[in-house]
Length: 258
Image (cartoon, rainbow, N blue to C red; front, side, top):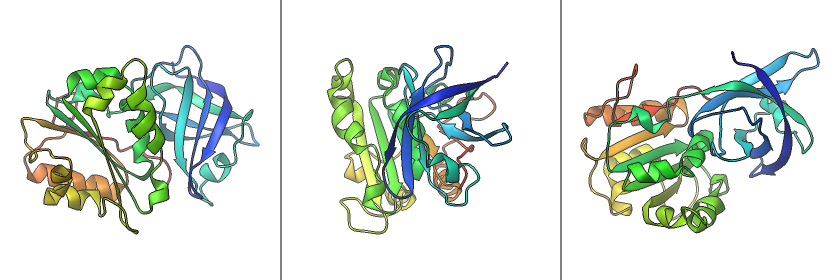
């Protein structure tokens, strides 16, 4: 049976005026797979919990929980959640679930993690998972945003993980990071879907054209990005993992309030 757990906020990081993340304590009995989401939120004045689906950004071996969120001024939950501070309590459902797990994918060589905005959250958990690097030759983390300052977690991705004392060498060899921006100058520019469809994404990373044999995908982001990316893959003959059948790609439909 799922239960509601109270956890204490440990620290908060405001990336921009519209993005923030925070860490909380973690009940020792809470188990999840990297890539999963859970229901998380705050107790209201009437003592009822207000919960939304949030991907878990921390890895399943971390002793804390971490969440990455947008700030919506009139959002029922985020209008409150963005003001949390260390010592505050949040509510976490003890049950986690989700489709962004490698077990839903056919074997392959290259794993593309396609994300926009806060859709990056589950992939931060996944790129910390040593098992992912055992399964794939290359793990390609993409992140599409509007402005450069929305490229969260860059220090973790580019500096901390490659220097991890246990599996840093594996990450150096296999993790490829591809951030792209649409509304200002940056080294990579344009919508991820356009870069995928044109082949520029693969060219920039010195990877071959997409193939059914070698390439697998996890996709998390805005509904429009999900729709467009699935259309690109479907047109190339890739199949989504559904109803327990292995596929070439998996997507997460449960998303934080927008």
